[in-house]
Amino acid sequence: MRLGSGAEERLRLLRVYDTLWAYGIDAVFDREGLIARTRWRMQNWLWRPDVTPSHVPAPVRFRLLLQELGPTYVKIGQIVSSQGRALPADWALELERLQSDVKPFPYEEVEERIITDLGAPPQELYATFEKEPLAAASLAQVHRASTRDGRQVVVKVQRPGIHGQLRSDVRILVRMAHALERRTRWAQDVDLSGVLLEFGTTLLRELDYSIEAYNARRLNRVLEPIEGLHVPEAIPELSSSQVLTLEFIDGVKPTRSAEIDAAGIDRAVLADRMIRGAVKMMIIDGFFHGDPHPGNVLVELGTGRLTMLDTGMVGELTVHDRIKLGSLMLVIRNRDVTGLAQTLKSLSTPFRETDDTRFYKDFERKLTPFLDPPPGRTIEVVSKVIPKSMDLLRDHGYRLDPQLTLAIKSLTQAEAITTALVPEWSGSEFMQRALDASFDLLPEVVTPEAVKDVVVKQASYVVREAAQQLPSFQEGAFKWLEHLRRGGLKVELDTTGLDRQVKQLSGISKLLALAILITGLVIGSAIAAGVAGIEESPLSPVRDFSLLIFAGSSLIGAVAVIYLAWRLVRGERKPREPIDRL
Image 1 (cartoon, helix red, strand yellow):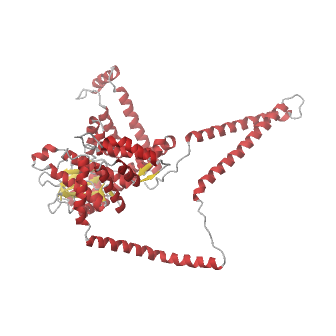
Image 2 (spheres, helix red, strand yellow):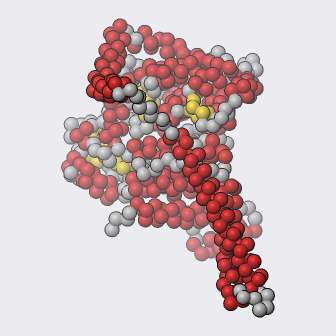
Image 3 (cartoon, helix red, strand yellow):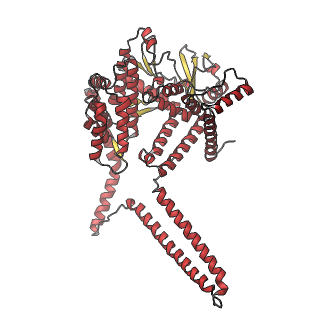
């Protein structure tokens, strides 16, 4: 039986609630003290475990909670772990395990998915296919295999039921965000529901492996001029929207410095390739890998090649955005606080009333110490400058475009990988090398032929748009001439901005009419009841009826007052973003 989206969402909400409750109770009884020791003794006596029960550290408990909650929450943990330098060491180390230490699903479900999508079992499609997964991730798991023509490959198989679960999780998170936005200012300022909706839309897009295969092909073309950079190629005949066969990459994470050195690979060369690749993707081409954390980048020890995995999340930047991003790198390199504020402001849109004077003053006061460090210290771009700049933007009512936010995140991740390879290349040194790479790569890309192609494409676009608008131009001109001939012109006034105020006035007038009516009923029924209570009054027969009207009117008035007070406390509700597209 297939559940509807509403029932599926409610069931998922109950499971999330039960998991949070169980872990919350466990955390309460697992604290140091007599209760915890008694509990451990009881567990040891009842279950006779191989390992003696003991206290579970908070980072470990949090990681286990995310894993049990499911892929959506694991993905959130992975994003947080990619900013590990801003976390305590024990938390960063534990959350990093989410990038590779995820519970796999049974081989029978893998086989069923391959049969459904590719039309035959793995043993018929591949020369070899290992039943034990090579790795398990939040959205899929990977199996080692080989093709009939001898190529070594990995097969990425999507987790069963992941699409429905992911959609339900995101809907739940967005609804919770809407509730927070109605009650807290900070949730409105960061547009929490919009951020979560964008996050969910991106995750759902990652579930279509045909898009990931296209991204891999395009990124390979972008990175082709950079020697030693690579993206695994997809094999179309053995891939679908939920099964993806890619060439096998044997390598280690860039954080494994000892193994890289033992293989005789120059880490400075790898770091330079990472910088040039990031610049080529973001500044030159505007099509970039959106999540290059250490788990998605491998160093092939045999060849020294740097390979980027998992191309499900990518970003695209316009020419204008790329120029601004390059300007951002330049002002950070030059330690220009005012330039940094101006550049970030130009890349943002206001979501409430702003004060530019305070904005620039706060930037200068709070960021100057980090852009002008003591002698011998480098600018801490990832851990200090970028996070504090984002905080200042939000505090002053500005919000970056989602694609630019993704680009800045990718740039900081690229710097984190570069710093892991060569610790001395952090902060301003990274920015200087990135700018040098930009100047080196621009002449190779901005050739007369390339400029000509761009001009031709833009001219063709303009001509097509103009051609499509010609009928409307003609029709509009004839209508204008006709109105002019008749001696009048039709003027259309856009009042969409007044709709909200008109609705508010309408609501106020209705409440005012209701208040007058209730007040009249209360006063009239009170007078009638008072007169009816006098002995020998002609209204004595209707005394009970008058009291009933008085009580009912008072009750309605009390409800109206409570409702109005609730509306005032809750504040004006922000229009919701539609989540039906999830």
